[in-house]
Amino acid sequence: MASTVKMKYTTPDKQFTFELEARDNKELLEQLSALQDIFEQPRCTNCGKRNFRYLVREVEGDKYYEIQCKDCGFKLQLSQSKKGNALYPRRKNQKTGKAIGPKGDGWHKWGDEEAEGKDE
Image (cartoon, rainbow, N blue to C red; front, side, top):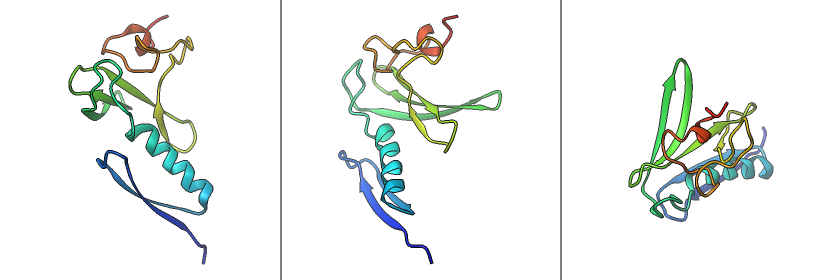
């Protein structure tokens, strides 16, 4: 029987608690890192608040994931990895390589052409 490593992790703000299970410490760290990258966003860099809504929308069979600030409407889009089905914050335009948003950290308002990848 294969042994597993288990971990219960609560985000610093105590908003989320996750139970992780992996084959080894390396896999456990990969899971934890992915969760922290999404669920431990310190604040909206536009208004400075931490009042988020996590959204998933589907357009023509493709799913889009994002974190939206409920106070000012800025959002942070999440990209999907090609392998492993992981999500991560999208901080650069995938076509141009330019940083997204007024502060270059990925947070931007809806309709920002550069952030949405409509800059051709």
